[in-house]
Length: 117
Image (cartoon, rainbow, N blue to C red; front, top):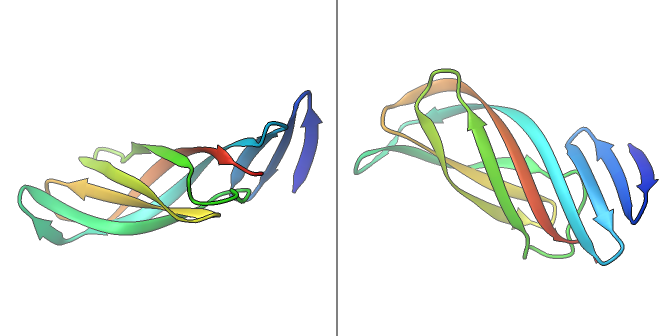
């Protein structure tokens, strides 16, 4: 783990991503992860699967943080329909597709903003 003070922010990184902790208590975390997803559960209009987890590089003070993600699916038509907190250190990403996907490799870039103190 690397921690470098940068002006009014502390910067750190580890195997889960990067973070910036600001003196006012705000923290920004970013990261990228490769996921293998299978979407087989059907609903009106498509297929979904819930709860592919990501881990943040630093812990928020609570689960009242904002998180969002960007998806790259290598010619697969798949979207993220929600991203939600799991606990202070992780979140779940939920995927949706109009067709069944078997072991599709997707790349997810994510961002979370909240308080660390």
